[in-house]
Amino acid sequence: MNRDVLRYLRCPNCTLGLAVADGAVRCPRGHTFDVARQGYVNLAAGRVTHAGDTAQMVAARASFLSAGHFDFISAALASATPGSDLVVDAGAGTGHHLAAVLDAHPQMAGLALDISKPAVRRAARAHPRAAAALCDTWQRLPLADHAADALLDVFAPRNGAEFHRVLRPGGTLLVVTPTTGHLAELIGPLGLLTVDAEKRDRVAASLSAWFVPVQEQRLERSMRLTHAEVNALVGMGPSAWHTDPQALAARIAALPSPTTVTASVHLRLFTPRSCSCVPRNTP
Image (tube, rainbow, N blue to C red; front, top):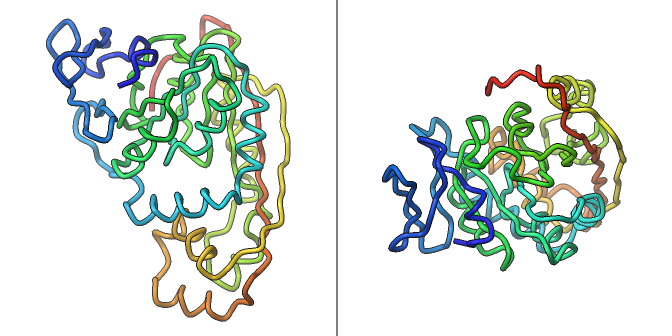
């Protein structure tokens, strides 16, 4: 467990600070959390009702991201992240984007949060200055108030109340969501889920009680993908839960190889509202 990150972590049961003790982390009240051999710590409070991405989905994501297809997103995040002490990636997956931000900001430490064990196992090894914790980002985050200078949310759930609590005043929330043009060439031929045309407005509305938008970019790249890369791209996203593998394989085989696919996302930056009347409830 990275000690530069540990000082920002809090016990999910009593919210007191944590310290390393005999291969685990422990709070002053004796709540103890084992550090897995892969390096992550399980800070999920109570019963977890969903397991997050499967091992197969995480492996697909690692394969696709390692080929560099979404590095333009990583680069934009790294450029937009204010450099200071701590950057948190909520719903971090493999930690790929977090690692790029840390590479660009050598003074920062990073924390990857995810509910998927296969994901945090990889995220714990994503970067020497990164730590990883298993937790449900819909619940209270295992972090001190105002701990983070920046918080990344890339294709992940958004817990506005908790994001506001853990970001310092003047900190930055960086949110990446797909546009309606994202993977447009594959949606029809492969029967994938479509992006809601109102998603951009819905995301802004869901954060409006806690955050003020300050900047927005539309990022797009044209990718030339093999059949194996298309399979990994579909397998790492939400359509993986809704697609029959045999039917998908047949549809991918009918595509040209390589096939041209558009990656299109919104990157939006928000700053926390400073009003003392901001609601503190957590979804």
